[in-house]
Amino acid sequence: MLESSNLRKTYLNKVAVDDVTLRLEQGRIYAMLGPNGSGKTTFMKMVSGIVKPTQGTLFYKNKPIGVETKKEIAYMSTEPYFYAYMTVEDVGKYYKDFFEDFDDARYKKLIAEMDLSMNDKVTKLSSGMMAKMKIAVTMARKAKLFLLDEPLNGIDLIAREKIIKTILSAVSEDTTIVVSSHLVDELETVVDSVIFMKNGKNILFGDAEVIREERGKSIVELYKEIYS
View 1 (cartoon, one colour):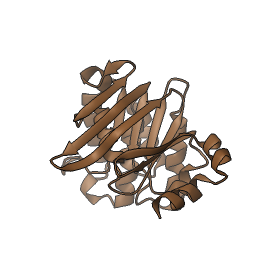
View 2 (tube, helix red, strand yellow):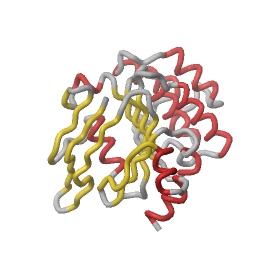
View 3 (tube, one colour):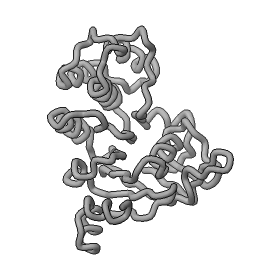
View 4 (cartoon, helix red, strand yellow):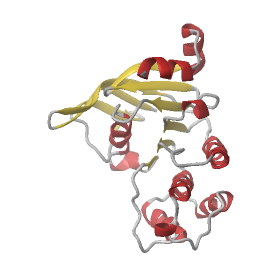
């Protein structure tokens, strides 16, 4: 579904992503792991078409990233990106204007499940409530590739379970999900594959179960070993 080769992104003299080669398959959930500054967000922004690579190639279904690929790729960023006047309902309308695959009924259902109100003003939402709304509006699209950047940040334990359940509900044979997070223990039981990023490089990538067997360690233990 997605293939990068020697992908690189630099900002002046800073290297954000360095020679990343990956191949992501349909029907799988990938955990992209690493501390802040490891290149996770920049990689997702290149896949979503927000940022252009400095070097290397990036293809979605054998097509270069562009206007056509954006129709099937849903990206949830960590930054707030809504206007101050908006209510939760307005956010849904905003997405519906931009994306043909936006499912308004699903959005309303997810908002209710997240214990939010369509009349809530986005400026009045707590960080946890904002995180829940962002996941709801992103997962309301009928996209084929979901890129979720730190979806569990600022979320309490109960809400995390709802968000993980929402993510899993989008999985199908032709859908791929990439989730970045520092909360490795929350993801280990639900992801199929892991991508460890460090200093912009992909230092370990593969099937989670195979890596656990080969290394004799859990993904959480490997995370501590690699980044300690």
